[in-house]
Length: 153
Length: 317
Image (tube, each protein chain N blue to C red):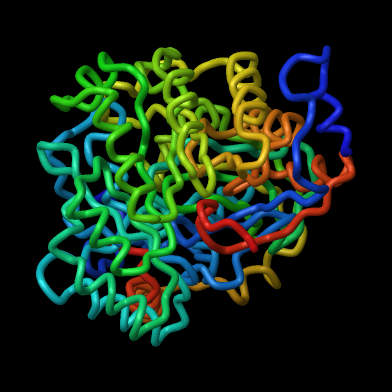
């Protein structure tokens, strides 16, 4: 994927321009025909450290924006994975459950978590970060804040 | 007596008595960001780990290879420790865990920071815990003078493990000497025992337990070997639940009046959940970063949960 799509690059962090991002959780959302594919962005996975365990609700479950659809354990983070949109889980990435390291090694590719069949997509996208300038500004702010808090090396 | 106490009385073996009430403590220090539905940090910077060697460690132990140091804030060089602690204190940090890699002799080079440790306590008023590695008399004296709140060291009970896993030319007696020196100088001491340290197998754990039980320790912290990617132990299997439960119980019975905690390190996921339940069942006093559901489980056993955003080595008064 790298090199094939335009990226926003700040201090070594690369975020594809085409994606939408949850401001706090650093989950990316890609709008596809089948639904909204969700994963952890490069900044989020670097700040979390090595991901060692992932738990995800089964396909068919309804999820609400901002509520957990799973959980993650990593070297520097233990917590929930929160849905960026409302809807139903259409697909779960069993490969990433079996090999959580995919999140660190291929965060925009094989390391995705779920595909959500959205129920209110237009509304839900409104507060997600999108577009080169917005992503760049947000990412710069996040880097500064995480550095200040000691959450980034 | 709580239901978990009843389990310990068992068939009449062991002391059949322990002296703690119905409280259990859950800890989430700032070593990692932590959030579950039952317990979330309010101030992830409340308790901060610092490495006085940055990412450097001369031992390069089989289970770690210095990787744990990467998660700590570096403070290397004269004056940097105090400066970092002052900045942290100004931004709301209440305590620090001062750690670092070991030198070739198995000691964390804290002695060169002795003056700064004292200033951090006296001028900033931070709670200070230190990882010592092995301890000599000069360091024990310096830690006493600095007035630190706790000294932590992994105690190993098998010479083979010290040699093969830690790559250290030392023996069990050197750990005993460290405990003795800390006791002699009145330094609050919280030894850790890593269960399954010998490539996932139990080897010196029982000996380590008997060793620490012979000294006036503030608490004992048990952790479980957690295979890390990029280390020679990445493929080992941690000890099973049965062995861990028996060891927890043994520790509880041997230290009926000393807090015994389940520390940060243990395998993730369902294993973690099972281990945490064993800790509750066997009467351990505290659990760091509890798995989702552990707090509810403790409540179901009649225990009252208490939450702290510090290291579990800090014993609530």
